[in-house]
Image: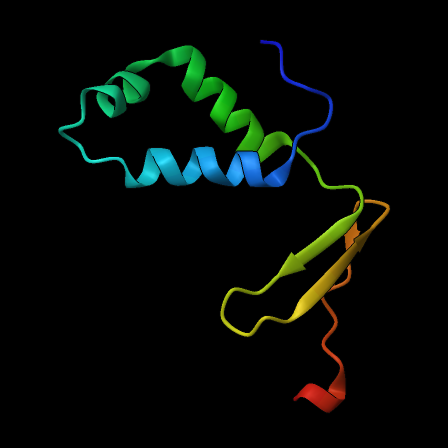
Length: 81
């Protein structure tokens, strides 16, 4: 399987959203769900790609957690509690 060394997270998010939201009766969605190569590539992107630098953002609160050297800092500032 040939995947790029780095991947734009918006691309991965778009693919995951497309698969999740595609109507079950859509022939292209059915085809993607049955495509072993595609599913393996999607699994790799969702579960095996590791962020080295960047941010995790909570969708509910908007809290930003920085990722440095592959380690997320999940500490919440006491002033926000």
